[in-house]
Image (tube, rainbow, N blue to C red; front, side, top):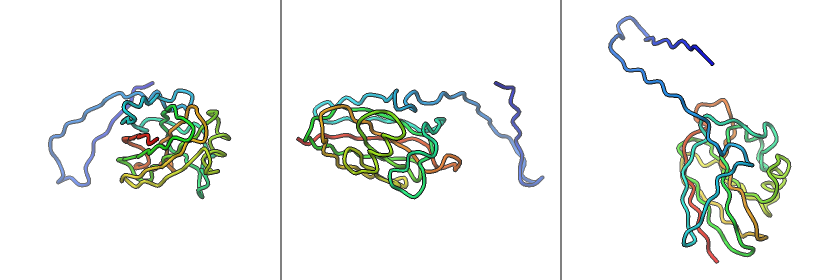
Length: 173
């Protein structure tokens, strides 16, 4: 698509000078769809992954709110890890953007399953908003299987509702 026109302006005629304009083409993250969740491999019971929700889209618009008052309509990034029934996991999110939400669920990658799971407090847990800080979920796996970790936000139009993050996962048996 294109061509695109880019205008550079100032607030007054006295605000003039040289500038540098950099244009970079970026692709959306591959793991913006739940079915394409990036696997997390725990080594020695620990793992750290970095990612972004920038340039992504909302996979389930208006569907997922995890029991909060408004839907998480920002872009998501999904990760998966294998858990053992009865094992405990500490999942920590550190984000560069406001109002980041972290939730964990098991089962199918459908909007209705995600909503049911993260609202029930059984297989799903929700944490947020993170507000550019570090927050964590403590999860005891109710069954052996694959669990999905999602990073999301409440609004898709606000400038600070997407960005970079780090997830730390640690298993305590």
